[in-house]
Length: 326
Image (cartoon, rainbow, N blue to C red; front, side):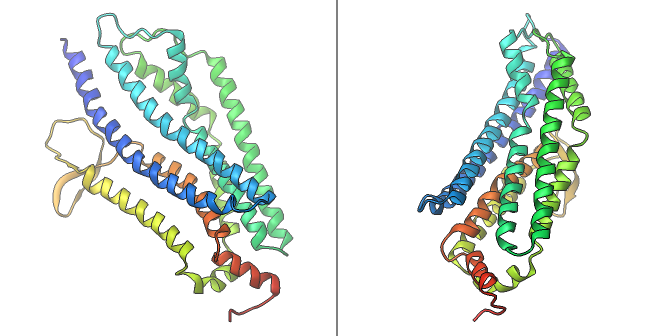
């Protein structure tokens, strides 16, 4: 076997470790997401109302998008390494037109589910703020403008991205030896050029959340309810996720000896108790963003719509004009 193919096999083998471990961390994350979804849906189906029906539809869309993200991450990693392995065969890596378009679709639309979840999160935050600010029409108008501009920016960027990618014609039908990395790089360059304005959506989403959480009276009046059943559920979800990430980073992923001749992505710092480098998945930040955009709207629904929620109690005092809790 030529040295070049041995190098390719070694690199793919080391990356397969990351792929397997990414799948292992995604499974419990998805389990926590399902738990939160079930808890959030229960009060929405207990009685019928148009707001609850709208939230139920939003949660179903969040569930579909998050499931899509999990499947897309797994399939894209799997497809990339399988294609590189196939390139080591004597006949090269010959993909038919259908397979080429499947791989291309996975890479092009990988970020869309997370973006949809982000927009749904903004929508739920705006809905929450409209309830918490019953008399402040200035804040309501500002939130509505931010949400509308964020959605418009996302639609324009998405259409522009799809149109430019279709016009470039960079999707080859047959991928020969060492062609696949070049194609992926071309996709990355194209997407980076086409979504230079995506930071606007992130800033707008941050603005929506900042404006919606400046309600000082809510925090002050709801402080007495911090030990309610609903907040315990939220804290349980948060603690579970924190423990999961810390265990994954320091235990299950473990430490890689810097003297080992293995091609794994590692950080550039040393821990106080070991000279080994901490191994972190290459797309760890992306996974955290996808998880956050999916968990946040679920947490908002749990916080508002469950019985004995602090938000329900606070709204009672806001509507009655009571300044202090009894």
